[in-house]
Length: 376
Image: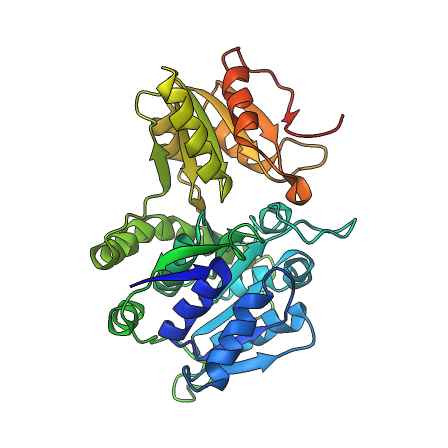
């Protein structure tokens, strides 16, 4: 059934169908509509979820850790400074191997204060041990709520699925909603391997680990990430049989015979597709590689897909004193790569800008990172 929904409300609808045991969250623009809508769903008796109303995002993630450690299926959501305030607890959740699911709505980090979209908040979290999945549309936001849950619970790692603030989270699109029975069947019943409340099988969780064990614990997290890469395709294949949509590591749009390619994540991919179509009509062999699974990063597969092509990577975040994050990932698997930064603080990007990027990469790449739409 296709329903007009914003990306935020699409996530709330998926959460209703899943029915998590606990949601601990603190409102922050532009994440607020997700938890606001889901709170109403619970208040109306349409989901049996314990909502923990905390005093900050740090407390939200701390409550999620306790909830998940006790064996409860646990969700949260955040953005920007809220995600930054959670940061202290993010690697604790992953090191404890807790399958918490977060709806992350990407927004610029302060300062100065800005409530609009860029990827500085979620990119700051990329080495915390969380699975990260980027969404382009409201449909993606709905679908990846389910896939993030299945993946997190399968490999024992927390997962965040990311939509662009205001662009995806607040824009209305037609979203195909699964029947409740199909959605609940795919989500399944959560059966944790261990629980702090299981007194018949007592465990130690969150111990003090010094030189003798810390290294091994970190290596086990990396093993789980490697497992998540394979499980992502498995969970996606099963979900595809229900939805009819595909869930690859990345989307290839008119890529196979392309000579020049843009790599991007999030909602901007839609604009790039428009530019590709227009340039193709003029005989230009251009294409798109849209990043979906960002952590774990599918290096081998992306290297193969981009072989022999001239590449522009569009980052919606900066790495001060270094090259931007997506550029560095692509640069590690390809040689002919140019880097661009765009859209910080919600700055508009247009189809004409995309066409200029394609034109710009006709020449050999340089080490200089270029800026799109910046008043120099």
